[in-house]
Amino acid sequence: MVGNRAHSPYHRYSHRKGSPPRGSAGRHPTAARRGPRPPARTPADHALHELIALSRALFDTLDEVEILRLAMDHIAAAGPYSAEAGYLKVDGDLAPSPSGQIHAPAVDRRVRKLAGQDGNVTVPGRPWGRALGLRGLEGLHGYLVVTSRSQPTEAERTLLATLVQHTAAALSVAFAHRRRREDALELRRLRDERTALQRQLISVVAELGYQRAVYALMADVAASSGGEEAVTRALHRLTGLPALVEDRFGRLRSWTGPGRPDPYPEPDPVRQDEMLHAVAKEVGPVRIKDRLITLVRPHGEILGVLALVDAREEADEHTVLALGHAATSLALELAHLRNLAEVELRLHRELADDLLAGTDETSAYARSEAVGHDLHRSHYIVVVQWSNRTADNSFAQTVSRAASAVGMRSLLTRRSDRVVLIADDRPHARALYEALARETGTRSGTIGVSAPCDSVDDIPRRYQEAQRALEVRRHCRERYGTSFFDELGLYRILGPGSDYLELQTFVQEWLGQLIDYDSRHHTTMVETLSRYFDCGGNYDETAESLAIHRSTLRYRLQRIRDISGNDLANVEDRLNLQVATRVWKIVLGGPG
Image (cartoon, rainbow, N blue to C red; front, side):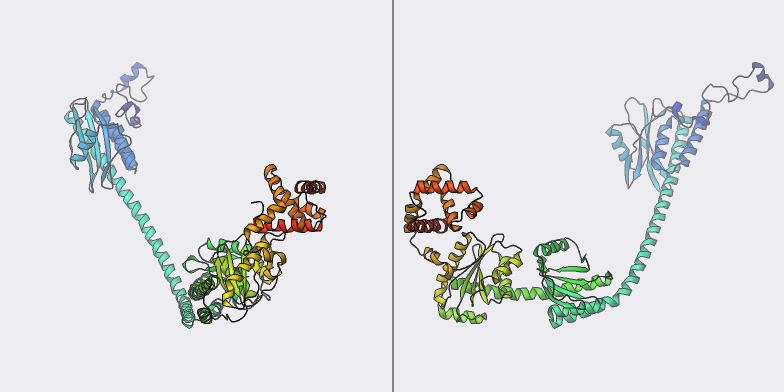
């Protein structure tokens, strides 16, 4: 309990009231006769003695909260007092002591209203209450709110004032010590900061010459519009390391310095994408194996890769600085080239779209000359579709690069999920497909090529032929690769111009019973027959393609004969059934 002297840690400095002096226990009664007995200690003497012990404890600690707690816990040493609350001034505000009693908000409001002055405080059940300021030379340190169960005597008031003064003095010492400690820490921080600034200044002065050289060289590169080779040349001069530029697909565009691989490795699309993703996540250049790599990406779009070959890991902060400035210069150059390419590509696409839709020859020839394409030659329409790629700008650029790589000069546009080229020569049977397989990293693509087109007016019809060639290829057993319309044979007459109703009638005549049977019994008799013809009547190959047993295939073919009433051994029946399955699959959409 606050003010309970029996629990005071300072009672060792005084004797309990009424107890015999130390060492008197066990003496013989006659021992008292040997000398005068000391006078008994009065309550005032006892209180003063305990206050002296408390004062020593107050000045022995340098923690303000602990000082206030000691004063509150031993307020009873000055008289019949109780400590109701204590406050310390923290950052200009009065903060209640955590060791104080729970007091009414009215007490808190009263103390704050005193504004640093002493004043009376009303606490229920206590006839006397006072808020006493703890002041030092620097001003107010806090408050002690003290109450008494009776009106204090003059002596008790004096003792209380003494306790308050000692507490305030101890707080002054603690505050002064804390300020000195904070000043010492601040002085140390300032000295450390000054040392760091001096080192930084030395570093800046040392690097200034190198930075000037970097700025001057890169400014010359930008002013000369030297392009990628000028950037790698300048970077090699600054760093002494081989410098190179690759496009975003990993193909070399420029190399300056020794050690260039010959031939340059063919990029792996999957690994290239993984590398770009890893570098894009980091800030600044990233080391991958023996290369220090940074991305060239104005406005966030990756246009290429700038790298230094650093097999011995000699690159330092100067190298990183030069690489960063070189990447900035290269980004401006590549962005400019990209803008020019996009304008040219847009003009090509607009012309290609108009040619596919149909346009007059005079306008078409004039516009083709403006974009540098000769429309007077024979052309072929080429339609490209890849199963894992949507026909967006990225895939269109991929097709354009692949076409250029195999020597195809063409106008390019996008239609639905396909890319369309108007090429000035017949494509090689496999060259474009193989080039696209390398670019995309997958062979799951289909290409349809029209018959030759000798006039502008013929282009829309040839476009339909290219689409027909692609659709036939997609529904064939070998669905990936290139198909030419003039090599389709029977499928040329099953194109978009055929009478759809007649085709439906023909299919119904020869396959109607099988189609109805499949619908009722959820079987695949028509698909089995179609696959049988696709495999040239080979039982083993047909069974393998359907993932069924040879005996199951024999059973199905016998059921087909029974249901349709047609004999597969009859040449006429066999031809009509094969044509019907082709029409059913290619023109009518198969099971759907």
